[in-house]
Image (cartoon, rainbow, N blue to C red):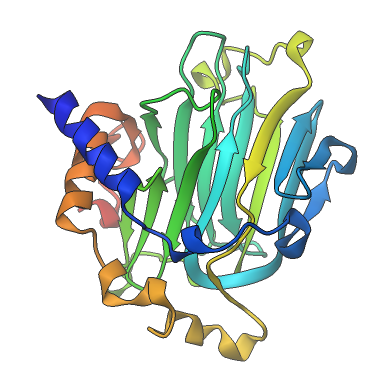
Length: 283
């Protein structure tokens, strides 16, 4: 019964429109993004509608602008075959030591073994808020959409419109909450010191170069043009800040609880070895 219910919830999510950006025309990579490192390993195709990152060491790209809120999205197809030790990322990050960051980290695995999706949240330089799930599909076979909602009320990570993580703004009780201007970034790099089986399974370089593909380069975000307009990014004139996005809808909440129950493999909130006392945001 649980599987049937989740299939129904998947159909609801697929038919729903989470982002108004879904209705906009496709734009090219170079309109909003630029190569950050590994120039020779970033390949554009289909008139800039798709970008491939290749890894012999690392490669990555980032947005030309920084943002103060938004509902950010990217379509990604992950490296196939034996990708153990390989980390594909899509994230938002600010500059400086006490930085804010919102992470999607896709942890590769041996051929035939499932990917793990890790999310993490940094506020004022403090992270260690990892959660991991198994995906209910093969992320190497087709493109799937990954989204991050960031407004003054909550941060939500979505996979194909299904919420997989919610981080509420509890700054009123002393919990850190990201507020700094952040750049959108994506990368492909060697993380075999930790990414697969705690670093026990290493990258097999005979399968290199590893390749990850990205699509969907339009941005639904509040651009930071100067320090004076940063606070305006939480204004309700931006649709992602409207009351509809202050909390999950009842159907989204059911989807979220199902993912947590069936697919979550790690949650820092219940790791009593690392945190004998639960972090404040987990209470």
